[in-house]
Each structure stands twice: as structure tokens, then as C-alpha cells.
Amino acid sequence: MAIGDVKTAQGLNDLNKFLADKSYISGYTPSQADVEVFVQVGKAPAASLPHALRWYNHIASYTDGERKAWGQGVSPLSAGGKPTAAAPAKKDDDDDDDVDLFGSGDEEEDAEAARVREERLKAYADKKSKKPALIAKSSIILDVKPWDDETDMKEMEKMVRTIEMDGLLWGASKLVPVGYGINKLQIMCVIEDDKVSVDLLTEKIQEFEDFVQSVDIAAFNKI
Image 1 (cartoon, helix red, strand yellow):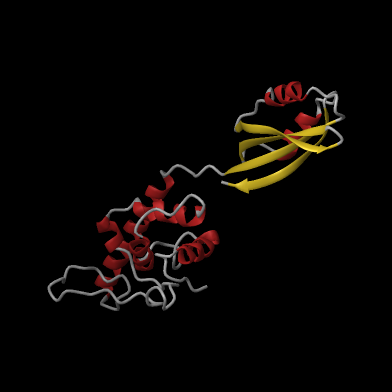
Image 2 (cartoon, one colour):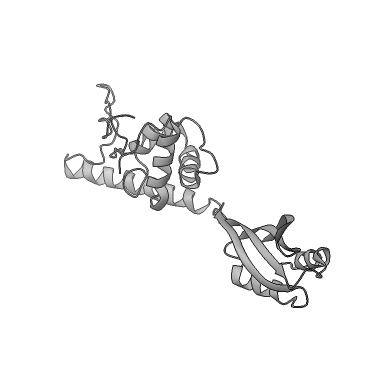
């Protein structure tokens, strides 16, 4: 998948889609391709682009020195953004101490390169393991329908809000006309996906059978 100019909204959308099932721009470890795109993005993407934001914060957690040590990678940026392949790293003539991880030197140099590579991979794995995991959340709007126009809607809402679950936060609500003088309760909540089952939540609401006829999901969005 080619990505357009990430300085534009379309380019950032492309990047977000590209990273939906990937941790890095190229391969399974950070590379200069990540650095190239990171520099062009320039600042953290909006929360509406969760995959791009996750990747950006991850790359930003490294120092400039650590990022310079990463190997090369293939960039998916289209010609409208930057070249599609990362340029070879510029090597100073006096920089004789750099270790070429992919070089073809003698056995002693190969062993040293392998040792350095293993150390870097171990340091990366240790650092990643210490990062707090992102908490997946969802925003849900529920339609809670009463039996008839004589149902006490304020009492219905009060009963719904008595439901407490770890990872559940109730939000704003309003009454929406459905016809024949009957209103439904439309109420928003935010849940932590790993802690709250939507099916269990709707079942708990339907247990107020003196007030509730049915519960529907009007909107469901990942945060």
C-alpha cells in the first residue's frame, strides 16, 4: 500500500490504515523507514487516527541516538510524499568504528556485529516490555425503550445508571420521541473492551422489566 504526503489529512489517513495491522513501517523491528515517516509527520496524529498515534508515540519514545542506530527499511511513501525506498545511510570516511550489521567482513567482525545486534534487540525488547499496554475502549449509545407512554422515564434512567461495572462509565442522555407520545431513553457510555461485555450490559438493563421493553445499540465506536 502506497502512502501519500503525510503532511496532508489524506496522507495521515493512509498511514493510519497502513499501520492497522503493523507495528512498524517496514518489517518487524524499527528502522530508518520509521524515522523518515516520523520526521515528516512532525507531531502526534489526532486521536481519531489511533493506529498512527500508537506508532508515533512508540517511535517518539526513543532518543535520537537510538533512532540513528536503526537499520534501513523500505518506506511505503508514494512519490507524492517522499521516495518509496529509504536512501542508503551516509557513512563518513572517518567513521571507522561503526558496526555494519549486514556486512561481509571476516569472522571476527561478523561475530561482533551479531553480538551488537543481539544487544540492541534485547534492549529494545526490554524497553517495550516496560511500556504500559494501551487500554482499548469503545463509546456506545444505547436506545432503551419503555413499554408505553405511562412509563416514568426519569425513574428508568435512574435505574439504568445504578448499573456499575469495572470499566463502565455512563455519559450524557436524552429522550427521543418514537411516536404515539412514547419516548425512548438514549444514553451514552464508555467501556473498557476487556472488562465490559456489551451483551451483559444490555441484559442487566433489560432486567428492569417493569420499565424496559428492549435495548438496542444505536452507535458503537472504538476509541
